[in-house]
Length: 291
Image 1 (cartoon, helix red, strand yellow):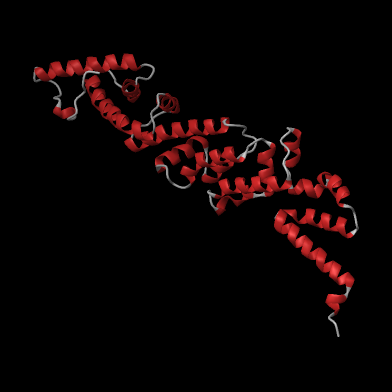
Image 2 (cartoon, rainbow, N blue to C red):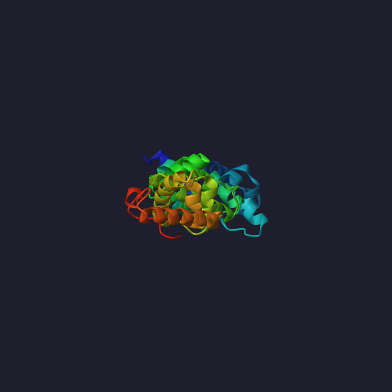
């Protein structure tokens, strides 16, 4: 007796449609379930392929599965469904370097939002790279803490900020780099025990200094500030951390601070040569120099 499941035409057709739906979902991904249902229903109702092609892009199921397609078409950058799916793989490849913690950013809907806001896969890769050093712990912790303290940015906030579809164009990368630059100087200051205000940190960063190149000069500024504040006190005056910073990095006010520094150093040398006042050794072995 023949197996009914292999001879019943209705059962065969049902099995064929089930297999078709599974194949469609494999191609479209799990988010394509509704679209696969719609297509299978059309075929099972003997709707022609030409009619399906005319209607499919106007369905809610299609818009759900390809949320960025309408925008791409509107800006004359329309692509095929296979090209769209390939582009999604590029986005996911870029974002996946952040790890499974950020899988919400891999979603069909989120990638559609990136497309709709003209954030292409290459730009998404740039944005991810800009934040990756921080969330993967490659940056000094003092810099990470400065970034968090300045902008309230946790690791997740950094990623959300960088991948926010409404943060348009390369501006977001530039803006984040500005934040990183400030955080780098603030972090170097924290490690050297030097409290720097945001305005000074921005000014130092604008002169091309980074966490690595600023650290030594900050340590020197701190030592100079300590020494000169004592020398100034002898004269009944002051020499502040800000003046030491301005002088060391040639910031606004640096010329005046440097002149004040030279004057205090000159008076100390005079006292030293006369064996009066504080000696050089009592104020640190590096000395003050002339500038």
